[in-house]
Image (cartoon, rainbow, N blue to C red):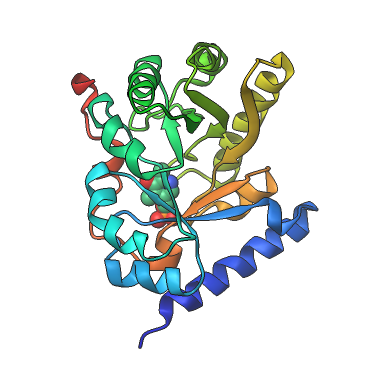
Amino acid sequence: MNHFVEENLKRVREHMEAACARSGRRLEDVKLLLATKTVTLEKLQMAMQAGEVLFGENKAQELRDKFPLMQQYNRVEWHFIGHLQTNKVKDVAKYVTLIHSVDRLKLGQALNQQLLKENKTMDILVQVNTSYEESKFGVPPESALELVEQLAALERIRIKGLMTIGKWKGTPEETRQCFRLLKSIRDQIREKDIPHVGTDELSMGMSGDFEAAIEEGATIIRVGTKIFGERYLPDSYYWNENIRGNE
Ligand SMILES: *Cc1c(COP(=O)(O)O)cnc(C)c1O
């Protein structure tokens, strides 16, 4: 049996530990989320057998396809990290415990409606476009506070913090600026002390930049390639679907 997933996991965890040591943080304050878009069930299973418990998907369809396997591992938790269309909230809410990508009021309202129907609540993060790239989703940084205030009024949604994707192919310094910006927006929101709004979670950092993200305060890093290998679909397939008309 091929153990490359396990070996990659070990390496990533070593880098996490080093980044925590460099920045005076505790390893237990940083969660590793495995980004599993396009990843085969076989590789997923390797990760679960290695003891991993936190996974993130980008599409409702893939969540559905992978659900039977997930059910076999009862400690496993799913998050949703991809762009979410309002007509998919029902499918997604069924499977996940945290949605990282709420970036507009309309989406929050659709989600709230669905949760009311099902009589349940959902934890979310607000995704911020800290790199100002058009190809990325996320609320513009200057509108983040306003969106948080609006979402806070929706009774079935529990805001837990913020999420961002660092600048695509940016220099290390540019990427780090994205993370710093997210943290400063978080601090601004925290100061407002908005009822029912949690600000503890900062979901930032991927394969190429998770160490910098940890140094800048990430509490959840989302890593795919460094653990599962290269994907056969470009990320633009997930990040720039040009489907805003569907909302
Ligand atoms: C794919 C993806 C990741 C992981 O990216 P890698 O570079 O493969 O580590 C993290 N976050 C989001 C939102 C993603 O879509």
